[in-house]
Image (cartoon, rainbow, N blue to C red; front, side):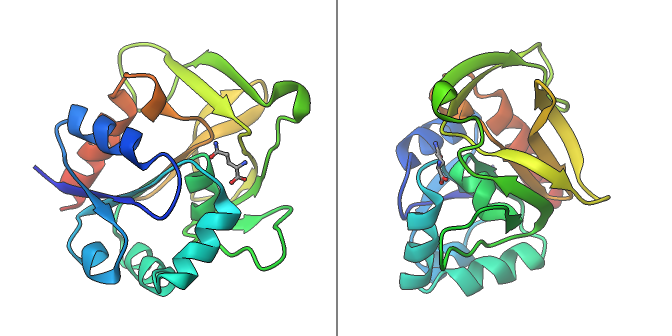
Length: 194
Ligand code: GLN
């Protein structure tokens, strides 16, 4: 089975490790460049993207992450992880950088205060078996995408799940529901890329 890392600087790392194990992958934590070098794919968890960005620099992981994504390593980002995979943030905090790789602009905390957290059943292209229960927590949405980006799901009119090549991102948190189908789809992508 493929070895899939979870970027373990900050955020809901344990939940992703459990979801990946549930999806039949070997899941390991990634905190150092040597650990990143050993994985076939990587999950960037939910959390706080500004903090994750700072810690990625502090742990000397930002450039290695960019290099591996550029080289085609499959990666999946949920929520803050989606922000990390975006080429551009609409409203970045000062100094906030991303790994990038997906040609999209994301809006942080897009759903506003009335909607800090909510759930919705969403059909996600590439995830068979019916709607996914999508948990949104201070979630971003995808404001605009380039031609190479496929929109996999929308909530109201907003894109909330996207794919570009080996890169996958969701505004929501499938790692919190016990439904491992999104992680299974990502594990399949990693197997195919390998
Ligand atoms: N609002 C957070 C951010 O901007 C993301 C929240 C989450 O990952 N649940 O990074």
